[in-house]
Length: 366
Image 1 (cartoon, rainbow, N blue to C red):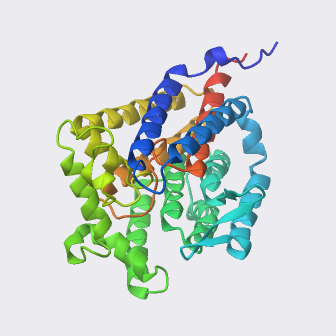
Image 2 (image 1 turned 180 degrees about the horizontal axis):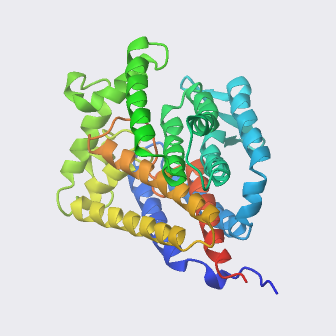
């Protein structure tokens, strides 16, 4: 007799760490926007977090095997939605990334595609279990991820497009790619990056400037290097214990660009110092460890693949965002999970966690 999923088997410890970061996010968005035209954004973040929590609980009771079985249709819908963005999407600051829905809601399909790709890549590599990956298998996997990635680059949205890569890499790694093919792919990727920078047809000039300015931000301190310079000043200004909430000179003085989204970690570090920054990074570490533990104890290989896909995306986003604010990574507009302001990012993270919870809870179903 099969018993139903029980929320008793929920990973409440993982959810606890997630909620701690979410609460920190609300207070930091309040502080970072206190003296700006964006004051009050923290209220919207609370609504999104509440919606994310509700969506997570709903998603946690949906059998992940059903998602895997239906992924062909879901993937097709996502590709169509990305094409629709290019055709009828709302244009903001020269980019088409959103579809305006009734009620003033802006839907950003590219964020949801990350979750869809995690499931799609899982389904693809499950069909290859037990045999060595061929070049044909690898190219098909690259095409699976490459189609939506190219559509998102066309918007243009380089940051979101880059978050699709760790899903592919996780799939190839778990799928058992051998080191020779892996080495060839790395060399090919380096060659493609070189071509992209030299051809002038793949990346726009401002994108190239953002990707290279972190190496020498002082070369253009009022232009492409401004964001990184101000971010590094804010982080350094925090010292060991920080200046205190709502007291960061860079943040409150409006020197730090968009401190409630891309550079929220810099704003937090200025106000709460090295100690505060380390605590936040420690919480991220604990979240990732819980996720990996759930992947290791999943009832089947598909569950492991799904959770590790989520882990890959989160590690990439955390590493790139934190690296960006301290000047070790280029500015790519990748949000910090559970911290940055934004509905699409919040909902993706909680839906992904809901899928993780379903994998965990399924272990206890007989």
